[in-house]
Length: 306
Ligand code: HMG
Ligand code: MG
Image (cartoon, rainbow, N blue to C red; front, top):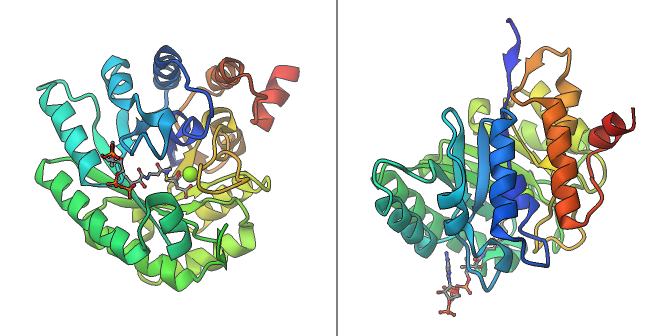
């Protein structure tokens, strides 16, 4: 077709689950990842190699990624905060020669010192130095690296964010070798106007094909903001099955925009995205039930109610 392909990065197993207070059984996490892959999603963030003292829920990621089905055509990634996390990934890969449990890593930093300290215990400048070592170390091992910038619109600790800072941090991550940088509206407070203003500044120094949008849905703006990003030329969107999630260091922020809602928003449009919507709706209900939560996907609920 003549449709414009949109890449969807499913972050539910990581961003979606990391904030859950009770430890989720590994078979549920594995079941989630397997279902998402079978439903046709092509990029799945499976977990993170962060400190278990900071995010206890992600402690079992090595077990998860070695137990999950590794489907052809699906890229599996994990979040890595420092050299220790990279070392754990490298050791895991070395233990599975010829059968890598994961394909790439993602590093993360922020646009404000306050958020960076809350999330990773260092300033943005220190974080970028740390990330440069992680990115170089990964590239040396032939591992591709994605980057995230948090709080691109509003910071829970320091308020409105300077978009010039977002632009410069994004550029630094790309310059150090990230193949793409995902712009995180961590608090979900952006709207199409602020997202547009932010992107106009970012695009002054960064190529649009290397950017992705990562919109939390706290204010119900996730779909609108994602479409705004597409209109600005971005072709990669992060989303979470059932709208799961939230960042433990962004108080009150809810999950990412739901994958189901993005796919529904793109139906009959100029764009095409992978994933079987009906199957994903079922998965959204399945995981919500496993967690004892309401399904946060408006589209999932509406389709189910028909
Ligand atoms: P720290 O306390 O400054 O570092 O944490 P440390 O080196 O002193 O380590 C503390 C302990 O953790 C030590 O254990 C380390 O060994 C251990 P102890 O010696 O006390 O027994 N440790 C590790 N264990 C396993 N894997 C590791 C690791 N590193 C240290 N990689 C650190 C600094 C960066 C480690 C910590 O702050 C951290 O892990 N932060 C991650 C927080 C996080 O995961 N946040 C959520 C993900 S980001 C997000 O959600 C935003 C995003 O979605 C975009 C958006 O929406 O904005 C991506
Ligand atoms: Mg996030």
